[in-house]
Length: 220
Ligand SMILES: [Zn+2]
Image (tube, rainbow, N blue to C red):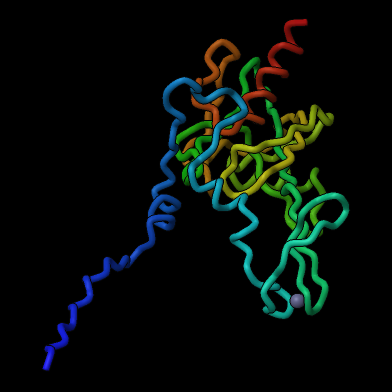
């Protein structure tokens, strides 16, 4: 009788933390190498690809059925075949303020990723039910401890280099009316910079552009 040989299965490699999670948590910026260096406005964290990929929403948030792809309003979207929920993806609105005092511009240093350690305008995402104006004032108070009065709307920018979401940044101009600068919330430092010495590591393309636009508006 022929002996049947049973092959021992190869041991499978298992992860305690998936490679995707590891990349996400590292917050590491992966530069594009070779012929096509990273261009302004094209910055992307590797994991942004995962977040932007609609495949990361598999199930209906309303009834838990598996979502299917369907063209709705000229775009391929994920929809629920059971309850007809449509997964619309929109940019998240944020607002911030350019605050000038005695010729210097107020910036905050980011305490957390993305772009931890880089500088930005005091700004943040608008809460549901909150106006852009009150968001800008709230974020400024949280991050800098300063009471600010808005003087005007400056400009509106779109941002694609925040790994968490696509964003729309509404930028106001404002003046300090009270308080002492003190970092709080997600800011590790609060500092005034002269226009000649704006740091090169400004987080987010939209913040860089806002500062550039503001400085060039002052010149002209
Ligand atoms: Zn559903």
